[in-house]
Image (cartoon, rainbow, N blue to C red):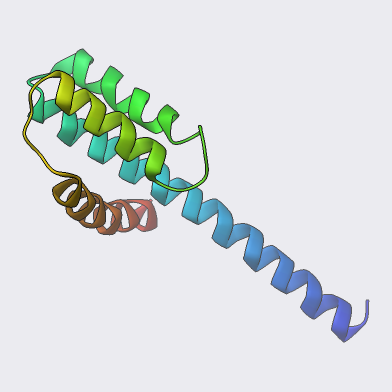
Length: 106
């Protein structure tokens, strides 16, 4: 294999690894945010875990975080939890850092 082909393969492998890592971090962040949101709505135990899974699955609807935010804010509204979109954004930013630490530690 030529040097150029080796470098190209290395870049492709790194890109694939980075994409997989990003997916894991975002899924973990969504789970953590889901658990936090469940707590805000008074859910605990198995109900909180089930809700966190719903949040993770909500992220599969469309690219980006809007689908997750929409789900959580709608559920907050339904349960009369007074948290703004800005506060949710801030919490999601906090959780992405925690999720990255957790995934990198695995």
